[in-house]
Length: 66
View 1 (tube, helix red, strand yellow):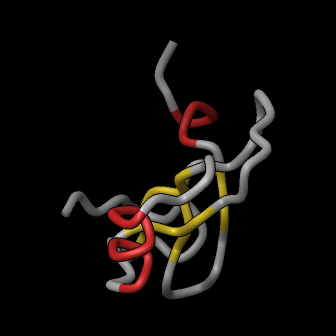
View 2 (view 1 turned 30 degrees about the vertical axis):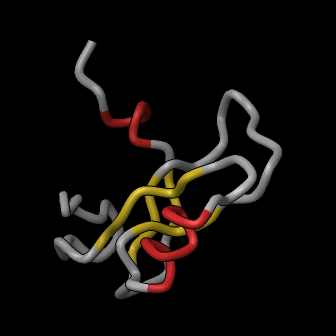
């Protein structure tokens, strides 16, 4: 499971937010706290990361180097 650094609290306790109708695998992963379910509607600027520590959500594309 890949970990991400939270831009708010700087911990490595963040996970991906996954969108779409959840199948069995997604529900199992969400139950294990490996992913966060984001719902069925996704927009261009929808957050794709969730910090389990401070509950911050963000879009990782905001932090890509250009």
